[in-house]
Image (cartoon, rainbow, N blue to C red; front, side, top):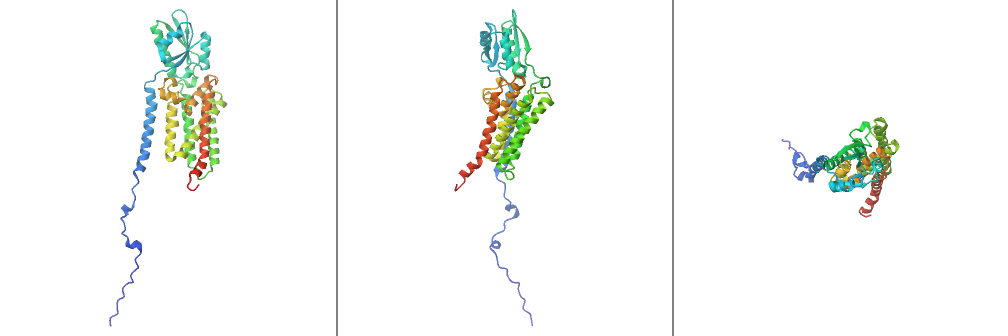
Length: 345
């Protein structure tokens, strides 16, 4: 007698069994084009802006209204007629008054008569090699046309350990970069630190950055003869301006904020600071923003504190303070603005 063969019980089909199974490769989603395109475009914009500004501004610098104190009855009019908008003539009562204007940083150079057929040009090397060279070239051209001999003297020379006058630029760049890096790291701490703690971090670290930079550049290396405390306060404000501005852009713009901060602070700000190419030699657009951005304001303050007894440092310091304070206030307002714009708020 044959034993009946029992078939295996059929498993009940589930909805997933009735659906076609896609191949493994098709299951992998291709990354959207934006994922590849955005970082590439940002990198190209940064490199184009960096090279275009730093190299482009040095390609053909032209003096524009460089301030010069001029003495002697006939010289002011002659200089204006010969040099036009290249210089801004400040008439001086005598050679001593013109020299004092140079020593205070009110003008870039002083020109006076120095006997029959002779002129005396007094410059401030602390204004930078590019500006000083431009003034010498302009005055030499004027003197050659007038058949005059020029004697030149540097009455405010650069310190021995900053022979090329670039210390202010490197200090401003380094402190701005440190503030940028500080804020970049702070942006990733939103889940670990409360907003007020991140404020303490940015403020305290900015003070440390400014103090370390001032001590190294001043007493340690001797490249900046500015008093340490005013210099440290100035650099603290620069670090704070860079840090809070970077934090602001990263908070409001998201991933694009850091590249924008790179363009504004590290590229445009430092390229137009007036340290490598004097502000009076920059194109009109660059001159307009030079003193308004943190690096340019810092370079002016460093130079003024170092060589001109801080006579014109108030304006640049106020500019740095405004950048730091306004950026910090806007960062602090962000949570409140987010609550107001949230759905159902």
